[in-house]
Amino acid sequence: MQHLTLPERNGIGSAMLIYKILTPDQWNELQAKGQTQGAPIDVEDGYIHFSTDEQVRETATKHFATANTLILLACDTDLMGTALRWEASRGGALFPHLYDLLKRDYIKKVETIERLEGTHLFPSYIP
Image (tube, rainbow, N blue to C red; front, side):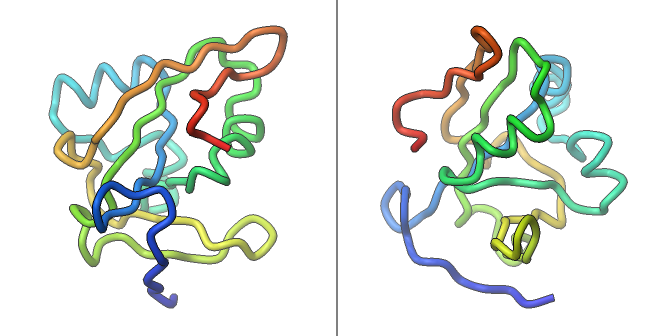
């Protein structure tokens, strides 16, 4: 698969932030161990699924529609190095996939996302 470099869109300095959604139990495990292989689907697929800021709402709707509480991790792509690859997924859109453990050091921001009346309430910086 092709590895692409994407331009800065929502970055901090020269880095780009990408997003991982976890359940509270998965987040607690990451905090305790300092790293994670991700959700069961990540382990099954052999990489950790991430989304860009423009993709993360759809990811929540598609994979976490009934979850009342989610944890949103904003992670620095520069810290992931060559283990991060951009690959075609839903509708041919490029999604970030991490072929390594998700390490606590990659995380720049953590948000709790609640569901109200069937809709996940994301922070205002997520389009």
